[in-house]
Amino acid sequence: MVALKTVGLLVVRDRKLLLAFSRNKQCFYLPGGKVDEGETEKGALCREIEEELHVQLTEEDLEYYTHITAPAFGEKRGVIMEQDCYLVHRDIEPKPAAEIGEIRFFSSDEYAEQSAQAPGAIAILKILKEAGLVD
Image (cartoon, rainbow, N blue to C red; front, side, top):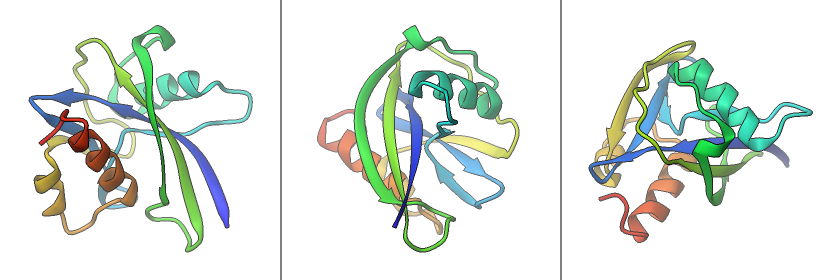
């Protein structure tokens, strides 16, 4: 089994979670990505969010929220995503960039209607729903 160390950004508005549609993987997932060698988690997340959403964040904008483990969507069988998720504590105006084709806010039920669902997105929506942050 192979583990991918990743970070994800949690943006909640009106009891819905921001997810980004990857043109490469044809699925909505949590914005973020892999942590490169020599990077801090927060540094990697700031870099990924600038690349994917045209939003400049600082490490001070981010607060650790939780860790999720799930099969890595779009990867070979046996690849597991280990993802630390961070809340952002200021308003941002994300715009799709790079491989991101669209961004949208989802409730748990709305995401369940998607034909392709990333296990990590399902896991974090469940956690946020149990915490009363999303519907």
